[in-house]
Image (cartoon, rainbow, N blue to C red; front, side, top):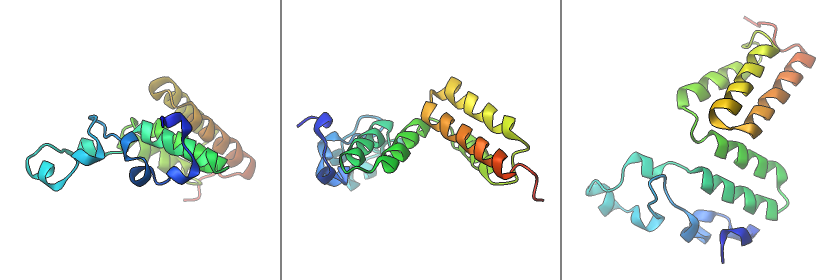
Length: 142
C-alpha cells in the first residue's frame, strides 16, 4: 500500500502506517529508540515533524471528509521550514491591534510566498488582513 491510498483508518500515521513516517534526517520511527539516543545517534532534528508527514495527515483528513483539518495540515507543512522567531513575529502581528494596517500583513504574506513558497499560509494571512480591515482590528488597542 503506497501513501496515495491513505484512508481515515490510517490515523494516527505514527501508529497505523509507521512505514511512511521518517524524521528530517531520514530515520524511521523504529530507529528512534532509547539506545540510539544514548549512543548519540538521535538528535533533535530527528524528532521534528516533517512537511511530508503533515501532507500525509492532510490526505488522511480528506478521506474522512475533514477539509478544514486537511487545510490546517497543509498550512502547517508549509511552515515547517520557517524559522521559529519569524513564526512568532507573524503570530504577534495576527493578534488584533498589533499590526498597524492591512499592508503589514500583506507584506508578511508576500514574504512567505517568495521566501518559503508558503502559498496556502500566505493566502490565509491575506484573508485575515481582509477580515481585520472589515472589522476595524488594525486600530491599536494599547
